[in-house]
Image 1: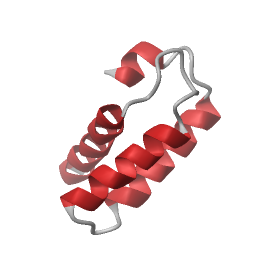
Image 2: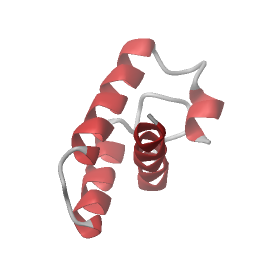
Image 3: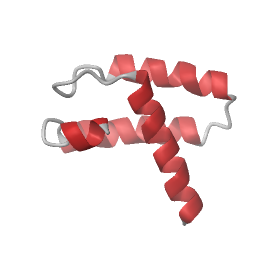
Image 4: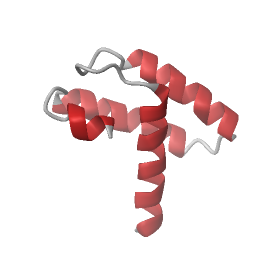
Length: 73
């Protein structure tokens, strides 16, 4: 949802870096607790890239979306 709203406010480079960090978490074979902790860290790191601050829930949504997409392939 955040991406849909903020896509016009976030540079392509920043979004690419955000996706890269989320992908690292996805490939990290982590427990859910660790994934949530990483999502909080990523949200802090990228909080200022859009008009609306990036929340940990937004990062979790991105990670789950990427997981679903990779399963479909």
